Length: 115
Image (cartoon, rainbow, N blue to C red; front, side, top):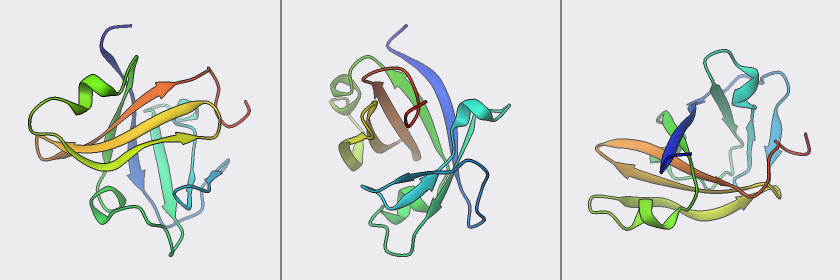
């Protein structure tokens, strides 16, 4: 793997989606982007989600990385959601740079919510 490789595009929805998984830390339902032909992850937020509006109301581009730190230490990066663990398989961070929202993902092990 290079420093980073494309993983998915995240799009907010208000409609329940097939095969959603619940993320308690963010209070959202997400779909597995590997099940979508264009690698789209749908995110549906519960009303009391604490996810910042910049992430909640804008699409994001997600990259798989070996280490989050180098992607946070470059100029022009605004951390919107500090690094956190999803389930037991993934560490993620959301940032704004180049006027867009990015998610950097460091897999702790392969899989998706127990798959």
